Image (cartoon, rainbow, N blue to C red; front, side, top):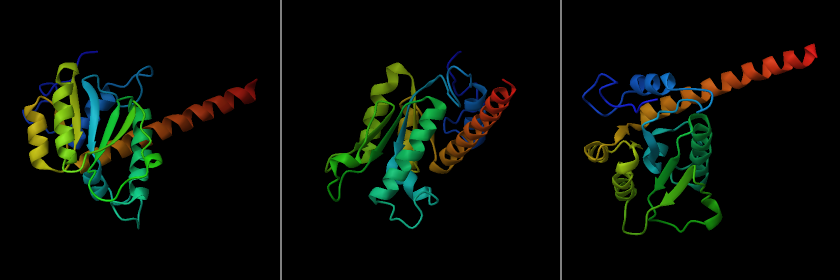
Length: 193
């Protein structure tokens, strides 16, 4: 498979719309590589609080900066990573109350980072996006327009939080549907034996 670039998407604007991202990701699926995997993506970089503020259905009734909301976001993005196969880094602003070390459960597939005091999540994302340039395109998810423009100028891709939420929800629905179909087939096969 070849890498996906903006010319394949028929646009000069590297900020991808939901429809283009979904079409690009779903057209690249194979059983071996997982659901909604785009070859060009080296990692998805998420501005954690930006996504939490937009995704109000996640951890309803919880403050957006709470541990419960962060855990809900990490849980959903872990499921999405399992569906798409692309590693994800979630970056939260580290200023504010100290976090309990057990709260941050990072793996190489879903990494959870907090910026240092005096540093923003945007600065961490910019640095990581720059360092990934030689390896492929990172996809940055944020509602900060200046951040998206900077990442695009570095050769990466950017998505608004709203578009990314729709992509995640669609991929998880597809995965759920496929698991149900697989389970029905296995049940039928077991009954026949």
